[in-house]
Structure formats: C-alpha cells, structure tokens
Length: 281
View (cartoon, rainbow, N blue to C red):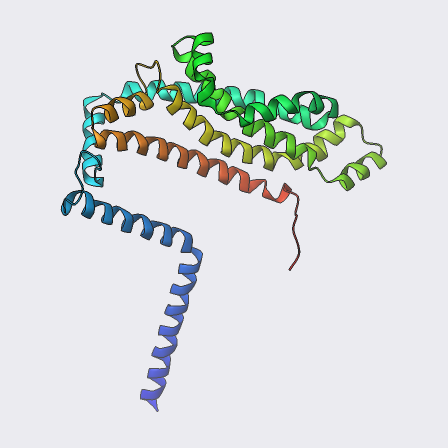
C-alpha cells in the first residue's frame, strides 16, 4: 500500500509538472515558436550559404559572414556616420509627418467641408509612388538632407493622416448624440468623445508610418546621396559586397521591429478605447 501511494504521489507530481510546463508553453507560445523559427532559418541559411558552400558568397552571404562584416564596420567606425545621417533624416521626416498628419487628419475628419476639399488630393497623393516624386523633390530641395527628409515625410504622412481622419469618422454616433443631449459643447464632445475614440487609429497610423518612413530613407539615399545606410547598401551592392548589404538591411529591419514593438505596446494601452465591431459568436 505504501509503495502504491508513493507511486500515485509521484504520478501526481509529474502530472502537475507537465501541466505547469504546458501552461508555460501556452503563455509563451508566440515567443517560443517565433524564436524557434528564427533559429531554424538562420541555421539553414548558414549551412547553405557557408558550411556546405552551395551558393556563391558573391550572391548570397551567411549569418556568420554578415556578423563578421558588422563587427568590422562598427569597429572601424566606418558605419557611424551613415547611422547618424540616416537617423537624422528618419527622425526629422517622421516627426514632421506626425506633426502635420495627426492634426490635419483630425481636422478633415471633424469638418466635412475640409474633407470634401482635401480628400481628392490626399487619396491621389497616397496612391502615387513616392519614388516617382523623388526627382521633383531633389529639384525643389536640392541634393542635401532636405530632399531625403522631404521624401520620408511624403512617405509617412499619408498613412498617419488617413488613419487619423478615419478614426474621427468612425466615432460611434450614439456617443455623439448622448453628449449633445446633455448639452456638451463642441469642444467638450471633441475632447471627451472624439479624441479617445481616435487615439487607437492614430497609433495604428503611426505604426504604418514607421515602415513608410524607413522605405523613404532607403529610396531617398538611392539618389544623390553621399552618406547613410541606404547609400552604404547601394555602394556595397554595386561592388558585390553582399555581407555589407545584409548588414544595412538588418539595421533597417531591427529599427523597424523596435519602433513597431514600442508603438504596439503603446497602442495596447488604448485598445479598450477602440470601438468593438464584428459579429458576436
């Protein structure tokens, strides 16, 4: 009897451990699966690109070679000026796009006449490829940093503007009616009803704007640039330095991922303000 009780107790302990492990996996499933996928991908890439030598290094690098190139670039100080230039361009272009896109989007969403006037221009510019405007931007702003800031601004401002505008337009009508029925002024309605309803949409626009701004950095530095990560990628690609190309691409990717993660966390704090739509199961 004592042995059977000990075996049952041991079985209960193992079941509890397995249950705890399964709960831990469920809680961390996203991180576990994502990390595993990245490790498997990098391992396969290293085997194909370097260990087995199945691909010419001139056309495809490997994680170890990219890491070695990154260490050399940072150790020699060669990349710091490129990072500084691209960082300044990105910061100014994105800041200006937020400064213009959010208030202008809210204004066009709140005032119908403004929306009627500006919507055709906003939709047309949003549909126009930014790279097509680059020659004009260079003619207007020169080949210095201003032209890069301009193309970044044009890339990022419209997702921010459109999301801010649509956020105002999707404010629940019953909330507006209730606020007006209690005698609230237009400013009180805007501050206490419209703005909270719009904030989640603004943050979504900010996330989309980050990706467009990074594209703008790359596109702007493809032409008439003497420094920047995009310029480094262009030169490295022209001279078949594939590992340096991947270093630049990795910098863009990490920057975008970090910015997106920060904005996603900020957006989650306001998610309860987002209107609930869709069918109820």
